[in-house]
Image (tube, rainbow, N blue to C red; front, side, top):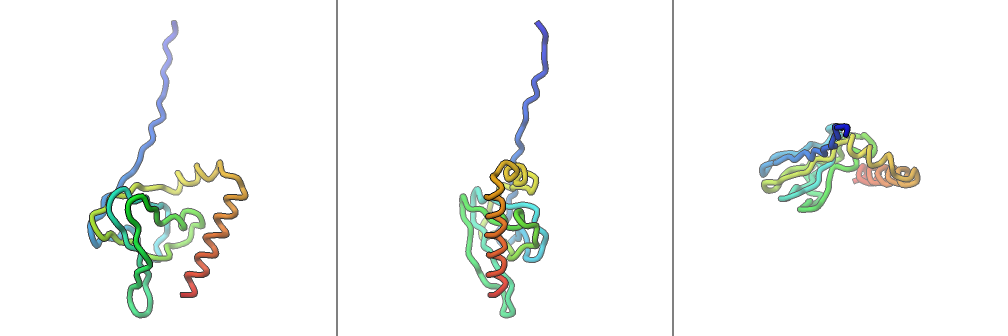
Amino acid sequence: MRSTNVEKQTRIIERRVVNPGQYVFREGEPGDRAYLVQEGKVEIIKRTPNGEKLLGDVGRGGIFGEMALIDNQPRMASARAVEQTTLVVVTHEQFEKKLKDADPFIRGLLNIFVRNIRQMASRT
């Protein structure tokens, strides 16, 4: 009987803990990852001539920062923890691996959605 080595592929899930008031990312920064909220809450804020504008918040099970993964454009808004928050990090590489297997129509549709959202957001 011959002995063989079987390699197990280990999936590493990166987590990040942010404290209240700490930024996950800031508007204008390059975006190379998205985040899934495992616990806690994050607010999404945009700079305006009159100060910060709260666009919304993302709680447990929500995802944010995904648009930068799709179109490689700078962040449209900032994300800041409201309370201690645990995030699951989705890297650009992980996203690309998943997207590679998607139908080309779906990939094109995602790009159109993101472009339209960015255009609408730039008008506000």
